[in-house]
Image (cartoon, rainbow, N blue to C red):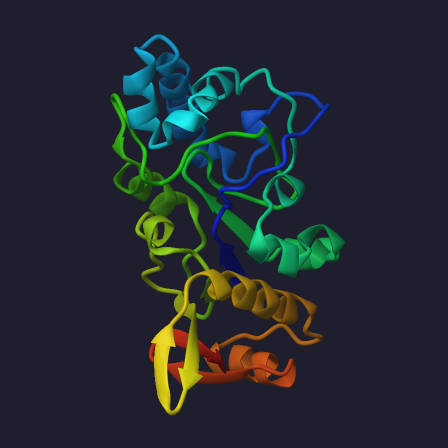
Amino acid sequence: MLILLPPSEGKTAPATGAPVALDELAYADSLTESRRKLLGALGALAELPLARAVSMLAVSKGQAGEVAVDAQLTSAPAGPAAEVYTGVLYDRLRLPELPTRAQGRVLIASALWGVVRPADRIPYYRLSAKAKLDGIGGLAAFWRPALAEALPDKPGTLVVDMRSGAYAAAWKPQRATQLVVRAFTESRGKRKPVSHMAKAVRGDVARALLEAKAVPEDAEGAAGVAEAAGFRVELAPGYLDVIVSG
């Protein structure tokens, strides 16, 4: 089983630590060239008029300082990705508390790094999947060839996908079994998808799957683990739907 997590907009900046070492990140052989190209494009933003740089980075005027931050990523302190990423999903998952073996079943999607492992050391950065940089274009299309080459995609592998659509567009398994986790509220027999609550649900479900004594090998096994953890779930082709009270 492999669990794919989204990154988080909220991040904690490491106060100390050596800078990122690209050759130590996940799938360095396949992804380093793309990572280096993106770091160069982010560094070049600092040379542009600030308004244009802000627009390309897809941040608000109040976040204009992120342009200067992104220009210094190769020298900024780095820390474990499991501690850098914060937010609702990561608060519920509590990834740093999980055993190393469980963390080894997790990859975190990233617009900058492609994917990282929880233990990979990265700096605080700002780059969403919506950004469009000179010489790069759309980030999902930019990453698609490299991720297709790098990521495990074998028949019989269960990929539990917690990513949002913008990050899911960068890679979709072709041979492995993909199980996308969705969350719905139900009230008076009617269901509707939820957004913010979905992050909490995905964090809780991911933790249940990673703590399971027997690692689920298929969709039915994942659904059984979630049910045993107290969730109401239903399987649809390619989806694990979690139903919460409205």
